[in-house]
Image: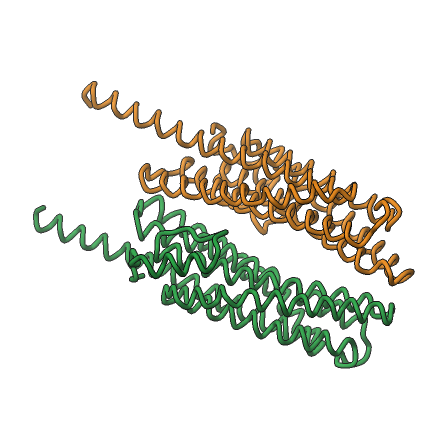
Length: 253
Length: 253
């Protein structure tokens, strides 16, 4: 290859890496916005804060716009750069991750709608209505928000070990969710007047449980990118075993 | 271009078209399996058929395996063929459609689990338990299954008009779903003993409502493929107006 051609290749390759870095960066920015939405939605539900709930609802379109924008950027990278191997897996991981982030954004919006709806049912402070359910939801919201934070950290550093740690926490989410549903059923049986509020709380708990699932999905894309292996629908222990046996295909982003 | 090179190019192009056709065909096969799963899940719930529910649950892994297989085939097509324009949009539409099909499969599995759980609660025929809710669910299941059928037809023929028709039915789904939830709340207030069964029915209704959303998502990918326009999160009437004003980018598959 002559020198000017080589220089031009290096230039294209640098530009391409910068584009991939930018995609990666956009995902983390979208992740930050979705985290903020989820936190505000949970706070609005727990503290009966209708104004905060309205803020979450009115910001959902920003999450949607980021998904569409990043998807378009990915399609352009595929069309113009025709990436292969690790670069292609990176683009695929971005395309899949933003779908889950958008749906976590939807869950935040749904929780905020429950919060707005619930504060319509309850004149007095929410702390007097279904206190045990509320404590359960507060705890579940902390757990799932921490999983989302760790899933985004795993994505930021493409850290397979952290990704596996997040996926292992999903059993705990399911356990806490089942406890909340049992408590909701007990409360509804004791006093049929609480049924409307109880159902709102149940939908909110369900949305949080799904946030945990989606954080796990993001972790699966991290493993797919680093190891070149699709680990969806596979037992966790098997994944850990296979990962221990195999060297990663790539660690750099 | 010399004759042998031209022949070789034609050969590659024919092979590539065959690969795209095959991807398209695989999506429709996966769609057929998911339709079957959803139909059986709804029948098992309505007729209290635990054996049929178990069949649905045990077949879910086939849906998952098809998603992973088609995803892998898409990645290979992207890596080897480096498609552009309409071909690239086709691969993107396939990648997104199978995610929604897999989640409709999950919804079918969830409904089947509710059916198995519910038949544990009810010794006698289900027709005597919450009859109005059951009628509502039967109707909602017909509506959403018909939407899925039409969404897959729209995908098969890449038919934008049909895709828009499906999307318009989603308001009807939301309406029927709201009616079911109101009925469930009334039944629970009247008799707290029905709460466990009522909640199962409510989750089933919720899953069906989400099936309607996912059928609409598939229709959005059809519009994206044909028109080269991402219509997610955009008002339906605006989409129809823009489509009337613009000629399609491509109609062939």
